[in-house]
Structure formats: C-alpha cells, structure tokens
Amino acid sequence: MVTIMGWRNVMVGMFDKKVTNPEIIRKLKVDFAENFQLHESTLISIAELRCHEPGCPPVETVITARFKDGKTKDWRISKSASEINHIDITMLEKDKNGTQR
Image 1 (cartoon, rainbow, N blue to C red):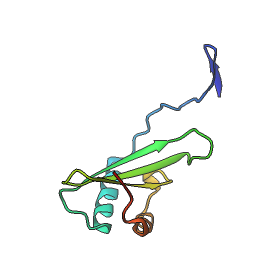
Image 2: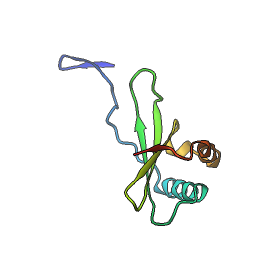
Image 3: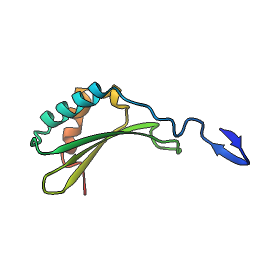
C-alpha cells in the first residue's frame, strides 16, 4: 500500500490488466461445453477477476453460460484461468445449476 496525493491504502497494480493466453481460454470453453453438454448455440464467456478485499480469493475465474432463451448461469473457480484443469471443471458438476439469473 502506498500514499498517493493524500490517498492512503491505494493498492499498487490493482488495475493492471493481465492477458490470459487465448488458447487457454478456448480450451477451457471447449472442455466446459463438453463436460456440461451445452448446446452449440450457448455462449460461454470466461472472466478472470482479481480481489484485493480481505477474505476473498486473490484470483477467481467466472465462467458464464448464456443460453438461447436469455437465461444465464455462472460458475466460479478460485484459480486463474491458466491454472484450471479438467478436474476443476468436473468438480463443478456437483453444482450443475451454477448461479442462475
């Protein structure tokens, strides 16, 4: 933490943008779609979020499925996208419903 122009507790690097390898994202989307048997019209988006608040994981990957009927479901994994593997995705199967919106 640093003090900048009178502001305290500013997190250095909080807004630095980290770019994940697009091939890793593509592989995650394919693996996720196959594991959950999603229809090809389902849009899958993957976002890697960083948290600097006490008690939350420092990195979280949110996987969102947007269905043709407009409904969405979210799944969260407390890892960066590059650290997620097939086992992490199959573990989500216990929560097949995800968070519905």
